[in-house]
Amino acid sequence: MMFVLIIAVVALGYIIYNGGSLMGSQDVTNEQSNIGTLIANTRKLKASSGYGTSGTSLVSQLVASKGLPNMSVNGSNLYNAWGGSVTVVSSGMTFTITENALPQDACVTLATKISRGTKVTTAINGGTAVTGEVDPGTATSGCSKDSNVVAWTVY
Image (cartoon, rainbow, N blue to C red; front, side, top):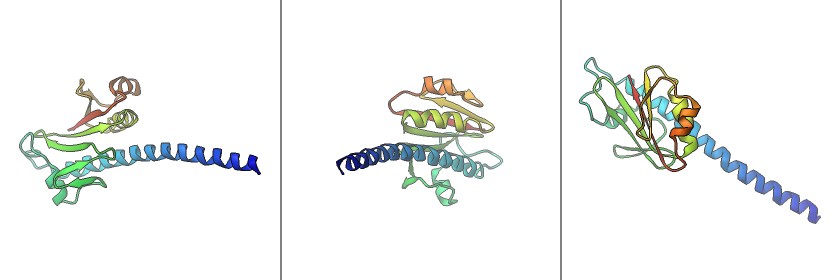
């Protein structure tokens, strides 16, 4: 009986440990989807003159057009799954989405996956922007173990 109880406790510990890992993975997957939705819905805001004055936040326009994904919103502030701020800012004919406070695994995954889109440049932690796909080696060396910032400029 004691043996069965020990096995049950070990199995429960394993499930809890891996369950936490799966939840973290789900956060990254959800955030990838959120960024894709932000890109698609922000592109819909483009007029013939672009996205408006450079430096203007586009969040209020996304709120009004119901173009926000499933993200935390407080007024005109967006937050990702890790509580970091998310900005969507006009650069004239382009716009930039910036995600703050990303853990290392999310930084690497999001930098490589979102950069596969067409007409996107990616900057990790203020480094040199990469046009097109960011390879995993570049993302890994650019993302720190602590809080990371990734910015995508979309053309």
